[in-house]
Image 1 (spheres, rainbow, N blue to C red):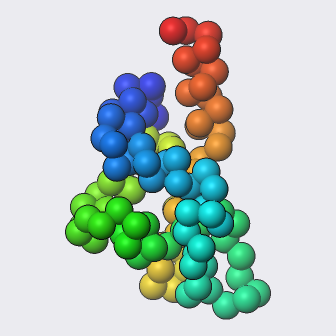
Image 2: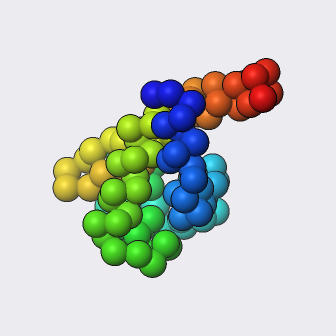
Length: 104
């Protein structure tokens, strides 16, 4: 992950919105983790299908966007059964905020 990769990932309005929405997943995705048994917790994770429903783009486009963000280090993915859950990678977000504060 480089700063350039992160900025490229954030240069799309939908991807930027996804990152913003995942900051407060309970508020922005009230049905999150609906596919998980009660004993399984993926804290802050939101299913691709729930993200797809919110952005109103094709499933393949949403998956591609999430992949770009994951490769840039902005998102973490956790797979459970047939579902993949995404959440923010707060360590990377803190590093990029520090970079902006100190270098730019």
